[in-house]
Length: 318
Image (cartoon, rainbow, N blue to C red; front, side):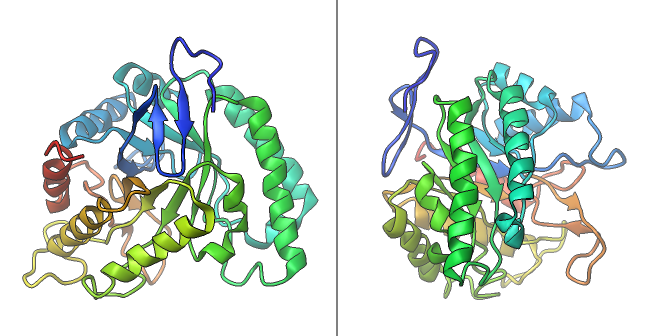
């Protein structure tokens, strides 16, 4: 995939690599949210500096703007600091709405607005057009699958018209057969929570099934894979041995065990831990005020997993 300004940079993808100026990139970073104590999702310039300082401390080189384009100030500082950004559209869990032409028309406008605003930021190295767009069984009918493919063919046609210099992805979950549109994209971003939502509390037992599931995606589409969301909730200050769910030890072990195992796979080009920091969520029976999968607390203090990642990402092995 060529770049219009090859004197600045060139981005290419192969079946097993993401190349920036001819050199393979291993993505080390996070899914994030614009969220912080007191201000919620409000823009805070000091927070941008703080978060990037923490990314530098931990050894991260990238993040995804899950699940919407962030304020442009985030990109402006990333440009200066050399942080790589996967910039994502605000399409989350579209499900049956994929079949509506009225939704497609709106989506095309959003894609154009997003990409025209952000395409001149060199930090943006890839576009993500959606997050977990399908629900289980929503593509069982052949006409539904064709509607889904029509939706994404249309989005991709508009997106490639706007930018020929960058690859495209979306964050997939479920199974390869639930993601036929993945064939249209350049990189696979896969969200899977083995040891948490799947193989719950059975981290070791679920390790090889996790690898097998990602390999199913690779075998189906032959695209390089970023483990775009994985991890476990941890209540800050909750310690327990042996490791149990919601303890800092369980979160740390989940991230280290799964990440280091995937380093052995040729199609694995990096990981974004979910999430950079704990964030506020709506009231449900499943969560106590926050999604607590953050590597840092909502106030940006490190959990045990932060020190684990700092060791892994600064070891020189990746």
